[in-house]
Each structure stands twice: as C-alpha cells, then as structure tokens.
Length: 474
Length: 107
Image 1 (tube, each protein chain N blue to C red):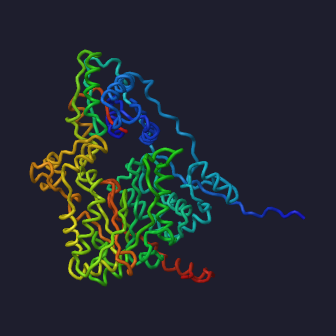
Image 2 (image 1 turned 90 degrees about the vertical axis):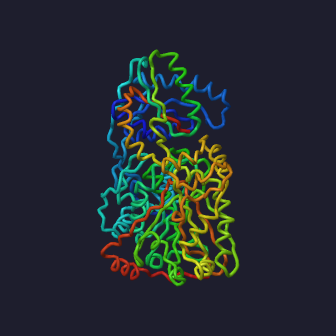
Image 3 (image 1 turned 60 degrees about the vertical axis):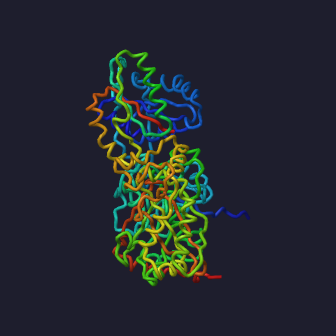
C-alpha cells in the first residue's frame, strides 16, 4: 500500500496511508526504503477483531484526524535520518569469538544462533568460487533498499556456516530470490512463510547434499547451512528482522527450511523426469529453485502396489491440509504446492503413471466447497471471495464459476501444472510430504548455477589440503 | 606464572550492504480539501469497504465540494493484477484529476 502511495507522491499528488498501529515500524522501514516521507493515518489495533461500533469510533477518533493532517500539513511527513553506515567490506569489529557473537546479537546481525566470524580471509575464500566481481549488484532489494552484492552473499554465507564451494549456489539463490517473480517485497508478511531451496543437478552429490533418509532434517552441512543462509540474507540484506528488529511481521512463524535435494538417480531410474527437467532445464545442469513454504503437511503414509492407492492418499491428506489456506492463492490465480514423494512410493506410481498424470489426478480430486473457501477467506482479512468475478476478470479458469451453487466443489489448486513433484526421502519407508506456498508470494523461481571457470582446480586444491579423516557413518 | 590469554581475536566484515535509495521529496500538501478530488486506493482487505464510506461521509460534512474517486475505479493493488495496476496507477490518478489520494489498509 505504501508502494502505491509512493506512485502518487512521485507525480505530485499528496497521499496518506491507513496503517494498523502494530505495523507502524514496518511502515517506517518501507518508507525509508522508498526514500520518500509518507504520511500515515493510524488505526489503533486490528480492524479484523473490532466490532462495527469500535471500527467507527476508531475511524472518527484516530484515522480521520490523521488523514486530514496527512493531506494538509507538511508536519505529517517525517522521514528519520538514515544513520551513517559502514562501507561494504569494511572491518566493523575486532574481538574474540564470544565478543563477536555478542556484538552481532546486539546489532541484530545474527539469527540468534552463533555465526562463523566473517573474516576477510574466510570471505575471500568464498569469493574464489565465483567469477563475479564482489562489487557487482544483482538488484537493490526491498524493504530497506540495500544492494544485493556478490560480497554481501559471501559474508552471509560465511556466517551461516556454508563452505566456500557452496558460493555458486548462494549466488544463484540470491539471483532467484531477487527475481520479481519471487516477490521478495512480501517476505515479511504475516503468514510468515519461509524460503525453500531445491537443489538439482550433479552438485547434489558433489557437494554432499542429503537427498535420502532425513532429507529435510537439520544434520547435513550443505542442506542445513544453505537453508540458514537464505534466512540470514533476508534478515541482513533485505531487512526482515523479527523483534526487537523490524521488517518481519510474521505473526507466529516457524524456523527456516533446510535445502531440499532430489534423488535424481532414482527419479531417472523409474523413468520420470527430474524436478529441474520439469521446469525446462536439461539433464546435467545444476539448478537452484526457490519458493515460499507457509505450511508443511504431516508425513503422508500410503501403501499398495497400485499408483492410485498412493496418489489418492495425497488427495485425502494434502487436499485436507491445503484446503484451509488455498483461498489466498486461488484469489491470485496461482499458488504452487510441492509434493516430496518417497522413492519407494514414486517407484510404484511411476510403474503406471507419468508425473503429469499424478498432477492431473491431484488437481482434479482435491476440491472443497466454494462456500467453505469463501468462509476461510472472509476470516483471514475480511475479503469477500467472489470467484465469478475472478473468472470474469481472467484471474481464474472458467471451472471456478461452473455453477451458481454456493457449495459446488472447486479445485484447491488452480491448475495441475502448478504442482511440483520431487523424489526424495527414505527409500525404505512409504512416506511422502507436502509443502504449501504462501499464495503467489515467494513464487517458484529457478536459476542455473554458474560454476567458476576454475571449479575443478579449486575443488582439487581443497581435496589436497584436507588432512582430516573421512566422515564417520556410525 | 600466569598464562597469557591466547584466545585469538578476529576482525570481521560488515554483514549488511550499501543502501541505494534515491531520495524523493513528498508532494506538496494541500491548504484545504474543499472542492478537491480525492482518490481511494484499497487492497481489498481489512474492512476497507466499511472504512472508506465512513471517511467519505465525514470529509464531505467538513469540506464543501470535496469529491471522491471510488476504489473500484483503480482496482485491487494487492490482488492477482497488482503489478499491472500499480504500473497504470499514475495515469489513472492523473486521468481522474485526483488532487490527493488515500491508500489503505495495512494491518
């Protein structure tokens, strides 16, 4: 809403924006990030829990005077002076490991966990693994308007506990998150979605990602530290900080996701294209894909030697879990569920069905009454979900307005092709899991990973330098 | 003999990045809203359909000749077509002759 107001201000039309009192700090941050002082009319509390009488009283007592002042008085325009900040790449602290942790916590530069000190030597080690200039800027990122530079990626990669050789993936992840399709400007929204990184290609094995049993658990360095990196980057470079910071308005939230890697050999072995191939990439290309996740299903157990036994279970479990929040994506014409299918289950399904047939079945069978979707929507933000109007304006396909029956079944997923399918997990167990995006925010976005020209040499040098014993398997 | 504290000290780099926001001045405020045209921008959430009519009613009572351009004229800048609507906003504001804009509702 402040971005809409900024459009008017820039053409010389004064504005005032109505903001709930709990969102004032975030509004100030966005205003600073836009470089524009914006007048605010404050609504005390949350309109969604006020009676009609309270709503009227607050509008008359608080909102109206602010509107009049905001449109008529220069005094309503406050833009805090930006404090002088360090230069990128400058040393900002000297101390012991404990002192550094304390300093970073106090500056709100950490996620609450200990960080690896980003020394010049460590950062340089990361920068060796990219051919990009450290000063190159991928994009200026909202809400704080900071430059997503290659250097900033290296510094936060060190802090997150990544290895230098992950740097090409980190660059690709930031490029993907910076793509307008990802809608990074909404990464601090109240549902509190988190980024999920999906890694595809030969780097999965080369960099030792876990794609098997426990694939989505903290425990393997590549999966864990890259997942942590995305959260740290959103916090430090975008400015999405939880209290006592500002910018991240996630109401309750959950922790970051570890990176997901596909068991591509298994997928190919059963005759299915890989996840990256589904997205248009060639076999053998290294790719990262990012998307939002706002809700994770329970583990879905399914049994039997027929494809339908398993896919119907996806419908029965994921269809129920996802039906609650689906209105948020349906009203935008797009959201993108991801189903991580256990290898054993994928093998049974692939014996009969293609991935497109799986998508088609889930899309067709996972429905809910339109009236219930409308009810859930109204309780979220007071919106009257008018499916017929969304069909008329071209946001939704015609089947959402196939009849006037308010209780008619409507798909919870807008189109079959919005469903992502990844083969990963324990080959010895019959389990799958579903991941729900936060409507079109955090839109599924992929980038090819560019390895440095000296990749083979750099990796060989690392192997030569390693004097440590091999990893234990016990 | 006392052991000297040999714990290493590290010099660490700034983990944030340079701000690159060009500063803009806000539009001049209006001396009076009487006779002015006020555009309504709404994200179609948080009860704006109740809030905007109250605002219209009270401002009309206070400022003779004030006119409103209904939020329906601009569309939902938070919906499926948000990018397209924001991109066309400046032209629509000009076309409707808006002297001021109220934008809501963030909560």
